[in-house]
Amino acid sequence: MNAHVTRSRPLVEMINIQKSFGGVHAVEDVSIDLFPGEVVGVLGHNGAGKSCLMRILSGAMAPNAGTIRMGDEDVRFLSPQDARRQGVETIYQTLALADHLDAPSNLFLGRELKTRWGNLDDKNMMEEARRVLHRLNPNFKNLSDPISRLSGGQRQVIAIARAIYFKVKILIMDEPTAALGPAETAMVADLIRQLRSEGIGIFLISHDMHDVFDLCDRIVVMNRGRNVGGYCIEEVTKDDVLSLIIKGEMPDGWWPRNAAKTPQPGLSSN
Amino acid sequence: MSVEVDRLAVPFAGVKISSDALHKLSALFTLFMLVGFFSFGNAAFLSVGNGLTVLLQTSVIGLLGIGMTLVIVTGGIDLSVGSVLALSGTVAGLAVKAGIPVPLGMAMGIAVGALCGAVNGIVVTKMRITPFVATLGMMLIARGTALQITGAAPISQLGEAFGKLGNGSLFRMIGMGSNGLPKVIFPGIPYPAILLVVVAVAVGFMLRRRSIGRHIYATGSNEEAARLSGVEVDRTKLAAYVMSGALAGLAGIVLMSRLVTAQPNEGVMYELDAIAAAVIGGASLMGGVGTVSGTMIGAFIIGVLRNGLNMAGVSAFIQQIIIGFVVIMAVYVDQLRSRR
Image 1 (tube, each protein chain N blue to C red):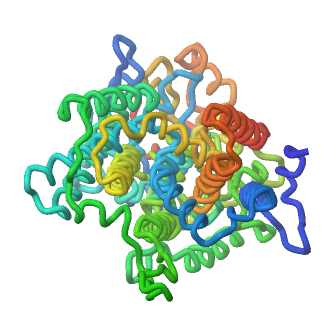
Image 2: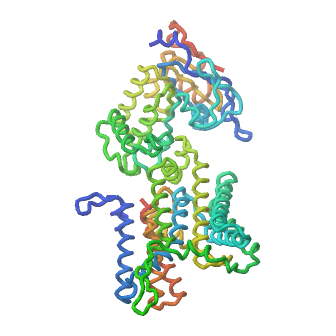
Image 3: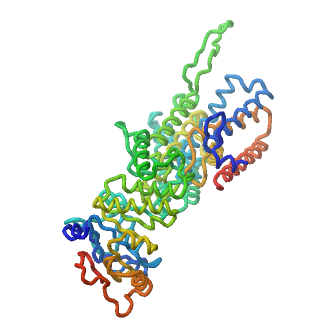
């Protein structure tokens, strides 16, 4: 895995990103990158700017300054469609589902399958939805019910299915397991590992330290809108991470746990 | 009980029925009850002639109701349709009076309606003013304009051609009576009724089978989710208001054509009938729910109620009171549904 990571080029680099609302600096001069087949945990308090940073990458919000580079090109995401076209998919914490619509309609919302005449191809969408949803959860039923009737886990599955059905290169997951039971959490963890093995890069926003240490290759910690540190997960302990999150700095006298390890690319701390 | 029923999607005669379908069925049941009740009271109610009258009377509310449904499903409301109806009708009347051919004059009326809808949509999406206030403003603006350009006087003597759309009918059969005078064998299907059916089918198709329709539902269901999913929320809303305005314009020329007079005072409070039709038919004022077929049932409930009460000799004032109660009951049922 490490060898694979060191050889490849970043999927995306966000460079000197800045975003403020009125006088409040939500994101201040943050740089962050992501490599193929890598899970990067984006950590921080509520209001530390991590969600804001991810919303900029997903096209839901425009930065005041900074560049987003994918491959050799600088990209500008003016809308979520722009980001999706470049293979950036997002699973929002709120799931962003339309409760009155059924699962296939939600899965294909905004990029519906159409027939030759431009009409909605509901039959095809239902088939495709059944296929992808059953891959994630073989027990998924009630595909034609409005999703307001479905359980939290099933709704999460729809949100995930929507992100991975289309050609995804970069996946942003905002608290994907916060609303789930143990079995469903394990399912999501397996899925993350599978996607990683397929070379997809994942930004994982999470408060759950167990998930972070279980799944992430790297972490980036944000505090008051700044990137206060990026580390390989092997270098740090839970206490180190908590210190970064809360105080914005490492404990006094901190030294990487596995200092001998070759440093990975893309570790930038401002 | 409604809440319970709503949640479970009761099996009925072996078929699973969703809460929406249940609402529609109960509305349909109400409609049949009303028809039964009125025909019991007066045999003439069930005659072909009266049926066609109801059809004719309902077509205007139906056209307004279809447009209203689109807007309500996006989570908005359009209070301006009654006034836009008047403005469109008077513009068409003035145009024809000025010598413009009838079809072109009527097209101008519809275009003015669509323009009013576009202004509504822009005020709602760009100026971020709530639909209630935005369309309330348009209600005053359109009414004021209609009164201003006509000097508050009706425009009459518009010619036979102007009255054709509202008064003509298809398959009208006239035979010779035994006394040598012409006798109407079948009064024909009024053009307004045909127009209503065509519009209902077209808009119903659009809502179910076109992506704009799906986006209208998604926008009303969860606007932020729709936006994040790549739905162009503002454009979707704008389209709904434009269609509502255009249909109000169409209803306006149908109504004025029926009267063969352009009346700037027509259509006062029609928006409330249109909203009532949509809500009785199961549209939710919270957005995301509503169908054309439901609104059609709602429009016919109001039409039948009006017609039946008229035939029973109930005064116009009492009619208002009764329809007021019906609207409150319908919204109450709507709330029971959305209170989960």
